[in-house]
Image (cartoon, rainbow, N blue to C red; front, side, top):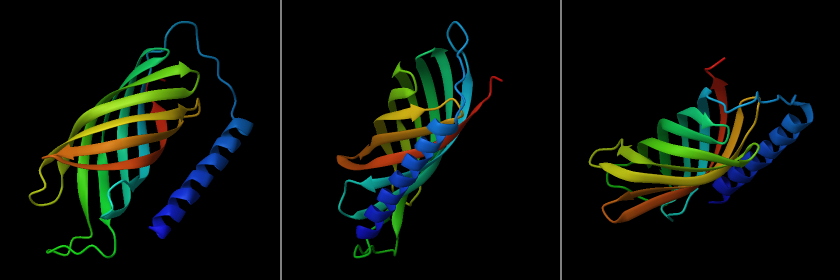
Length: 181
């Protein structure tokens, strides 16, 4: 647990440095009059701390498509991969080191103020291991989206299946390409 906590703290520190550098060097772009109708494709890396004692760390990546409907409301569609690594003292019958999911989610992002957003996603998470099945996945979160494409988010992500709930608190670092320009 100490190793994963150290990794998580270092990741948060790196993000804080990125935000500081971004705010110091970024040029402010004026949004044209009217609502944005842009489409963006984001590529993200996720690192999370599982809330279940059997797991040490969760790592993953995703692609997220975002369609702006208004200047402050966007819809999202995302797909990716998340792996929950077992702690070193957890023994499985088949020697597994973790379990994986392919989450596919629909969501909404609301920007109450410039750059800051509140998000919610829901969908299905397809297990990648034999007999794992499909789970309901839900993910409320918050984040910062910058004009240069950088997107930093923090979310709680739950995987509910057959009365069991696996969850993580995850940090997402992403870069979004504007497909409308």
